[in-house]
Image (cartoon, rainbow, N blue to C red; front, side, top):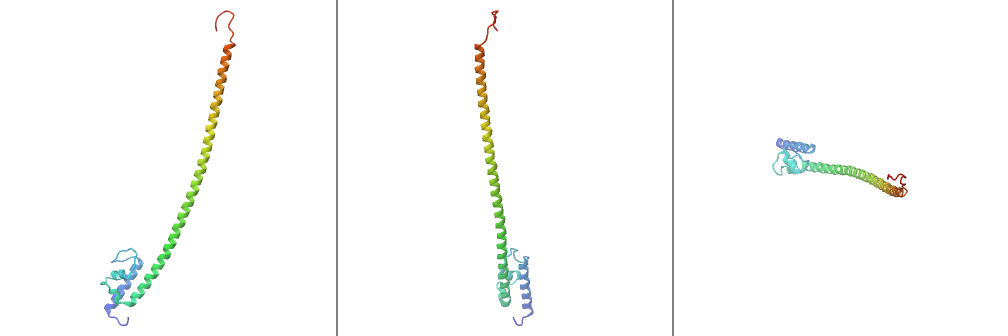
Length: 154
């Protein structure tokens, strides 16, 4: 722009300040949602609709800055997504390890439980055999009982 009036310079300063506020994320007249466009700059500067387009040099500079910001945001997002992905992978691997450990513990407990049941069954069978033997011996004792000579029953 060649020669500008004082009002034109003031408007250009307002546009530049609006752009800086939007870049910093501290807008005064628009929502602080991080989006930047020519319309947002125009609204932030408080100009009427399309007022920014009277300053073609500023529009070119603003478009370049907007493109640079978008590129840096996409790079930042890809790094964040890679970081989030690595965290998810670590969590998945940890979960796999825990599941494997729990499966091993479960299998060991099953084996131990089976051994206890088998041992208990063996003890019960041994007790059964011993009771049978005691019963048989009691029957034999009855057979060999001697009656006393006196005639009294014992």
